Length: 180
Ligand SMILES: [Ca+2]
Ligand SMILES: [Ca+2]
Ligand SMILES: [Ca+2]
Image 1: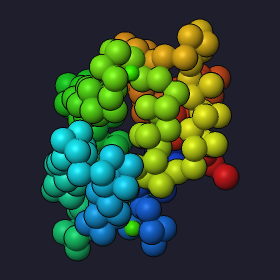
Image 2 (image 1 turned 30 degrees about the vertical axis):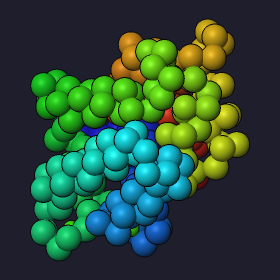
Image 3 (image 1 turned 180 degrees about the horizontal axis):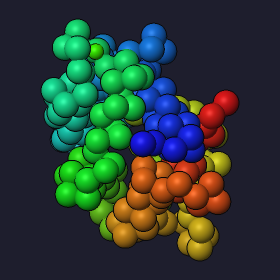
Image 4 (image 1 turned 180 degrees about the vertical axis):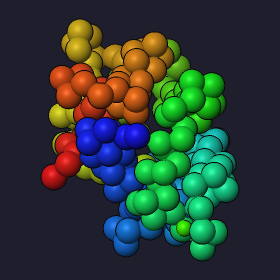
């Protein structure tokens, strides 16, 4: 079972993907993501990789989480999907850590093997989230204050966000405030 804290965080994560805020994640939300990628990156090769990564993510999500096969993932389907994915270590690694790894490489545009403040704002921009929120969250997540989040740090943040049930962990803030 998902705890109350996990449910709140995953509901926030749902809202991030439900860009048009109609209570369903569907192809049209991912079309908006791809449009934001083009706005942020133009038609560069980086933008192609990123748009493709999100298109793949939608295919995986719609085949795994759209339980009633109506072309959209509603909040109940989303939470049911995550409950299963989080129960199983192997599945978690496949679902989350593989995606993190790919996104990390794409958003690390200066290839410094870390995500800097501006690169993190770019990640938020894909979801149409404000730079001010990205700034505030980055400051929370960058616990040693060196202005960079490494791959290892990101995986630990993401484990705190998805699987953790400790309200004190900074990783809970990955997608901003939740449970409001
Ligand atoms: Ca939607
Ligand atoms: Ca559905
Ligand atoms: Ca970087």
